[in-house]
Image (tube, rainbow, N blue to C red; front, side):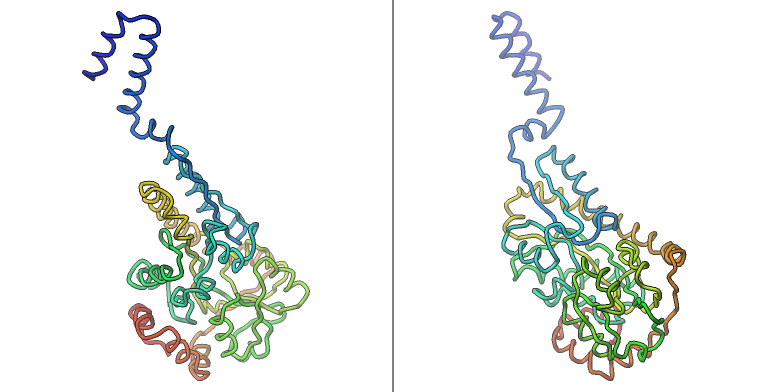
Length: 352
C-alpha cells in the first residue's frame, strides 16, 4: 500500500497526461496486488485443445469432461480452452486415436481396450471375470495397477491425464433369448469392440464375435448383422439399445474404464501451471463421474424394464470355467507378461 500512496501524491501535482499515466500505474499495481494472475492472463498466450470421444453427450463421461473443461477455462482466466467433441464427431475411436498420435487432435477419451491396441498393458483391466466388485476395481485402478497402466502410454508418445472414468461392468444383451449359461452363446453373432481381448474371450465361449464401431451398433442390431452385444447399462440406455434388444443378462463379464489420453508433445507445450490446474480439475470431475455413473447404474435396470427389456441373473462360475478350459487365461497371462499379470492378481486373486 505504501507504493500506491506515494504514487497518488506525485500524481496530484502533474499535468493531465502525467496524471493519466500515474493512474494507469496505480491500476496495474492494484490489479497485480488484489487479483493475482489477472495481469498475467491479459498478456499470456491462449491454448486451444480438442478432446474426441465417441460416447453420446448425455453419457456421464462426456458430461463430466464438459464440466471439467468449463471449470478449467474459468480458473485459467481463459488461457486454457478445451473443447469436447462427443458422438464421434471427429471420427471413430481407432481413427481419433491415430489422429491424437499424429498431433491432429490433442486428446481422446476412450476405453482401455482401445488403447490396448497400441499399449497392451492399458487393457489388462478387461480380463474376463477379473474384478468381483467396485471396491476391488478402485483399489486397483487408483493404486499400483493404475499407475502401471498410466506408465504404459509413455513409450507410444501419449500421456494419460488425471484419474480414470468408470465405464462400468458389461452385460450381454440379445434379441432372441436370454443368456444364462455358456451354451447359450454357442454360435451367437455378438458385437465386440475392435480389440483381440474381446474377440478372444467370446471365441473362448464359442460365440461368433464381430467388430462393429459403436456409432453403427444400433443399425447392426436392427438389421440383424449381429444378434447381440455387450456394454454397461449406461451405454445401453444412452444409445437406446432397448429398442432393438429384448434380453439383458447380468454377466458382469468385464469391467471397463475410459481415460483421457493426449499427445505428449501437445500437452507438454502447455505451461506447467496450466497442466497442473487442468489435471487437478479433471481428477475432481472423474470422481464426480464415478458417483454419477454409480447412481445412474442403480436406477437403470428399472428404467430399461419399463422400456421393455427383460433381465436375468447369471451364475458366473461356469463361464469362467469354460474360459479356463479354452486356454484363455493362460494365453493372456503370457501376452501381458509376469509383471502386469501379477499386479492384476494382487487385487483380483489368482486367475485361470
